[in-house]
Image (cartoon, rainbow, N blue to C red):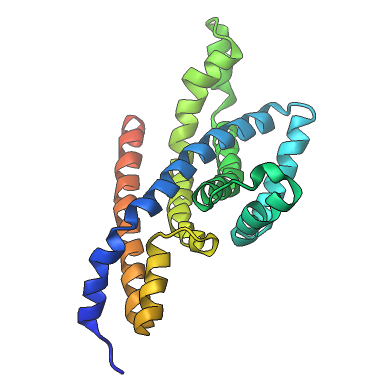
Length: 223
């Protein structure tokens, strides 16, 4: 059996119908992960007693275990221990799993970016009457955003690719649809190459957005 180029092309519009599900998972995951990551990073920066130790444990666990295992624990394991999770649908479980997993990585990037801003910035802010939280919100975090942007965008790109694991929970997104088409036609190479090209195009577009955002944020620093 040779390579069926026409069949691969015919799959593209079919797979694109499920692209919205993939992007929705990634978008919701991005929002929740960023909120949680900022909270964790601030806890680490200010070394809040007890919470700092708990945040370190959280980061260690979610960075030290595979995402697929975390998704299975969340979707299949938790309902056995906590009945309240029995009604959790596969899409929500995937979003929660992606958020928890990538928040651990983003928290460390944000923490490093905050500590990378010169201490004199905080001291100057305090000297003109700002509170520490005002200085953090108005002065430190905007500068930390510029520093953390490349790594945060890389994690978002990784998150989009990781949504392909959601099909193991039963979510019908582009990877799941490709698997279905491959199983029915036995043209596995064509089906998976088509889905690979779609992921690749998404990453290319996001990379362009990343370069544009970096140039925009760095404009004030170019001499």
